[in-house]
Image (cartoon, rainbow, N blue to C red; front, side, top):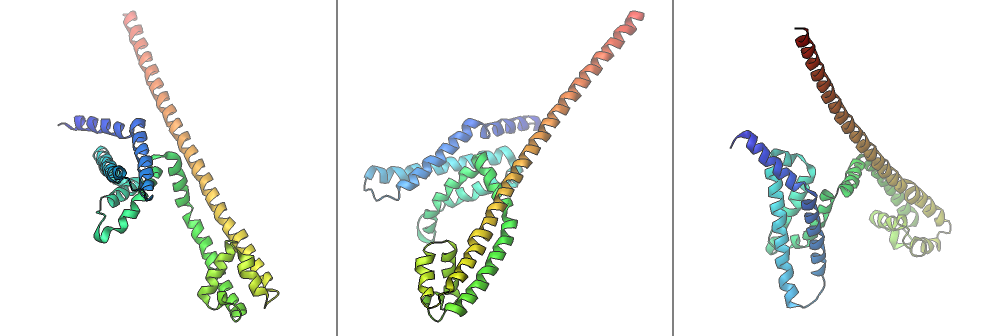
Length: 274
């Protein structure tokens, strides 16, 4: 097989795996598989379902394997340059392990196949890419939050440890302050029992809530929103560059055609002069 024929064959295979019908078919299988895995959690004693669901699950996994093999053949080495392809490969590989012995825990991880929607749906993929891009900024905020937690836990242990089991140690104080940060029952379950012995303890909890729940955690939202906007602007710039490149190609084709017309006119004039 010549290189040109092989290239044409690969291009047809690439068109197949990138065709909207093929992508929609895989997306539908992912959703159907998600529903099937959810049905397995119900204690329904129906022989047909107990036999049909595992069989259908195996068929869907084999289709996923065939899909990945087609992509590997179509893209060649380029397949392994995409992080999303690696993601799909790992998720599907987990599904191939047996459900017995040391691999029993992997049975519960089969639901991770639903995450393949991230790779087949561009809108969801953009959101995940924006979240990944925001991780460096979020790590700095996490460091600030961890420092606040440590200082506050030490202070709470020193101040309230003698009168409340919730603050008797550094670990207990940190766990209790996490509950306070989530605002889940912080007033009735945490603050008021402490205030029976320390009336001004409310001031400590209010300052902690303002610094963590209202300030630091909102910084996470700001970083994520900024990352989403940056991703949007990058996509717009990329589309603009692609449009400019296409326009430049059209201009070059037009210039080449005009030059060919001028050359033909010169040849006709030269022939007429003869």
